[in-house]
Amino acid sequence: MVDHARATPATAPESIDEEEDTVSPRRISTRAHGPDAAHELSLLSLGFERVTGLDEVGRGAWAGPVSVGVVVFPPEGDPPEGVRDSKELSEDRREALFPLITTWCADWSVGHADPGECDRLGMTAALRLASERALSGLRSSPGAVLLDGGFDYLSGPGPRSATAPHIQTVVRGDSACVSIAAASIVAKVTRDRYMRSLAPSFPGFDFDRNKGYPSPVHRRALAGAGLTSIHRRSWSYVDDLAFR
Image 1 (cartoon, rainbow, N blue to C red):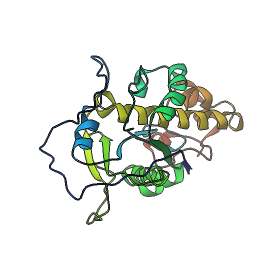
Image 2: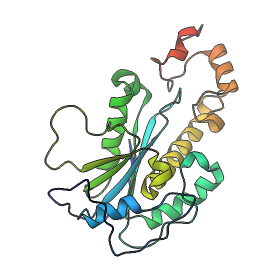
Image 3: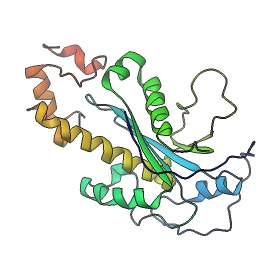
Image 4: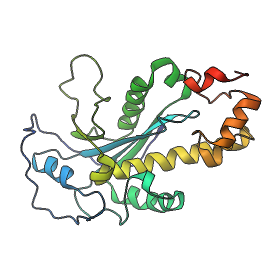
């Protein structure tokens, strides 16, 4: 499942010197208490024309998909004021920022791995699958991907393709890189909307509020009714359920 958006074409250089830390002449506002574009501008200065931030949501949920958002950093224009890690924002604020981000960025997409895929593949492979689906939703492949965290789950086992994008992991990237923060917001808003749409089909589970994450209401519903068709069945929370 992919939520697709607009795109612009770009090219990528054949190699990159990861030690170089120069930035392009283009200027962009830097916030003292939020993510900035230093990583994106550094990659652009090295010749990558489609620098893309990537972040996931739903990894810790009991129900629903794991979702990955990607946002292509635009060549011009400051990002919307207030872009932050989605966890630092209220639901109303994320919803307000969503159309501003999708207008500002050069392209965006959200990919998902469903609960059955999370169970069958394991979370690392499910994240890779959701990421591949998100990236395939872009109209042109990125030259470089800024990936939140310290672990590259995107590359996968085996040799890398010559056409694969350069991957740069950034610890706490959703707090440091504006494209990653923007990706976290589009992923969170898209997944939350999906979980709200499912809530009427599963009364009592409060999915419109908890979005499939653990909560007292969610726990009580599981104890009384057991698993639904959108629950992950290999997670440890299932072990003590009377009804599965």
